Length: 105
Image (cartoon, rainbow, N blue to C red; front, top):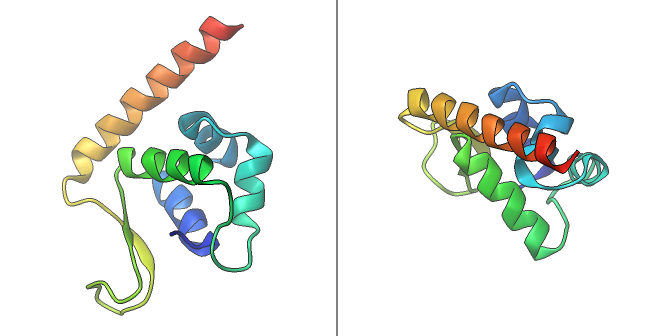
């Protein structure tokens, strides 16, 4: 699971706005907005949550679950160790999403 705070932090860490995250995850902007506005745990159907998590992880985000090893404890996000390739992965995903958007027009 992911909290709304983790989602917002992950998006900001990647330098994405809500529109871009929606494109990468295949979700709508209102869905991303609703997820980020949650009070604690992000709620949504399983398919939407999987799309969101896959997009974040593919872009280089590592979600830290409560109780997992972290320097201060609690939940959080961090870039994966090989963050250089995470940026390349994000750029690749952005290119693919852009091509897909152009093809649908």
